[in-house]
Image (cartoon, rainbow, N blue to C red; front, side):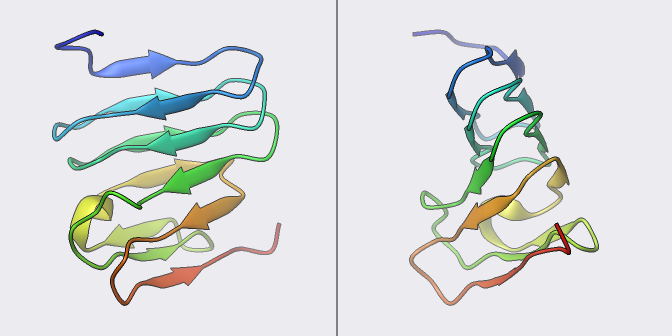
Length: 101
């Protein structure tokens, strides 16, 4: 267990990286990664592989558009994305939009 860490870089394997309420930079590196910022204006970088931005822990609905790189509502507010191929939403009425990739 770690505390007071804002930025994390994953490995060449399939990593699951969870942030916290502050602004985080989560870089999955290579592999099929799952990145969950969990609050704050996070930067989620998937890298190589099929990567997922996960919002299952969000208490409120999220609106995410990978084509326009915008995110609002719940834990997604202010988040930005790079090399993210998949999205998982919250238990609320989310709006999830992919891109051409």
